[in-house]
Image 1 (cartoon, rainbow, N blue to C red):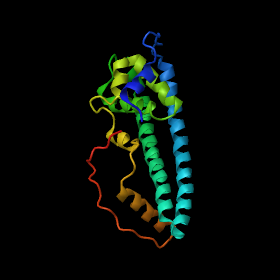
Image 2: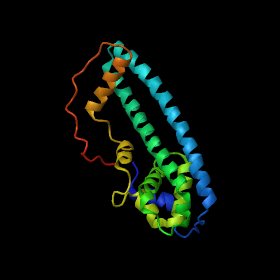
Image 3: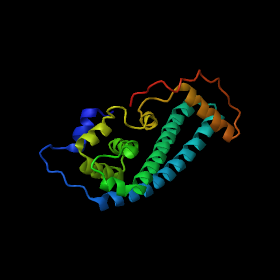
Image 4: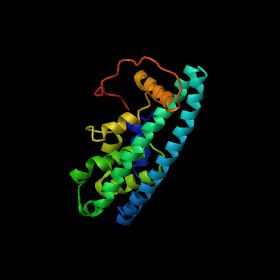
Length: 207
């Protein structure tokens, strides 16, 4: 699990190393490329989910509930990751549409703060090169303090849904059972389990 210190040091590296300046064209290209990359990753995740669900359906039909439960955790995490890709794609499209505003602004515009900071937060947690390219350009434009704010989620500036869905915590029992029920229904398997009491949506989950 990442720590605020390790993520910050990993991004900024040697404090004495000269940082390259902001390049408008590089940011524009990175945003366009990232949108395409995220679309590809969403498709890959969808295909992975379908394969795992098929395997789970076979386990349920054979009565191997515990093995099915273990595999469904992978489905949930992949599903969450795909949701994050969707959010990031929207944020990149939003910044691309207002890229002239980013170029002209000395400080990060308030209307783009959540988009920019959420993308920068994910750049240190998701292995997508284009996210890191965007992070570097935004840091060069608006300063390392803004980058640190995003990476460490200072002031809860990052979309909380993204933080929750990138959490390393094991999915709640009621979500696991709900997924198993849905898979059984989709594959017309006679399987049912009592759902645990749902956890309130406002319960904080640590990243």
